[in-house]
Length: 183
Figure: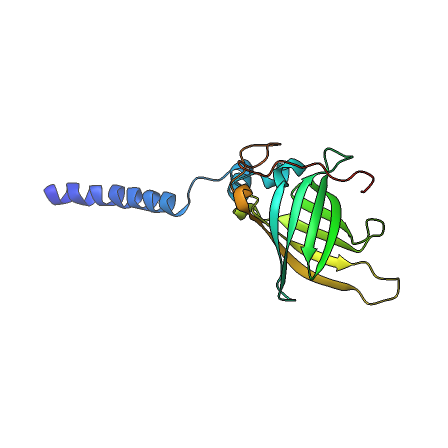
């Protein structure tokens, strides 16, 4: 009789083991909101211009060239950016915006004419300390396109995690006044 009881318990134990194994192999479903938070822990797609203020190192990996970019508030458009670029022996200014994690800057070497366009995206895993994109020189229609990859990395006291939507990263540079009459 004892052996019969053990035999009856065996299928129940086997069924329990199968259920446990199935649960272990299939973790609870992750919501879209949880997936988004994991992919973008610092919410860089919600950042505004002010979150990018500070000094950045420019790296053109394909050209083995580096430089610096200082970003601050645009003097005429408070929700936009103004930058001072130094690379390749040239100084330039740039104006632009950040929207949904994408940075767009227009570069001018003479403060009048467009020289190049910078289009990049904040790298979510860097919490706003890195932007990767493409630099493209403005060329006359019909001339070959001149473009290269760039990486911007935050340097100095601004290289810290973002503290909240619309707030500059802790320790970010305070915007300094810029010359008027330029865009």
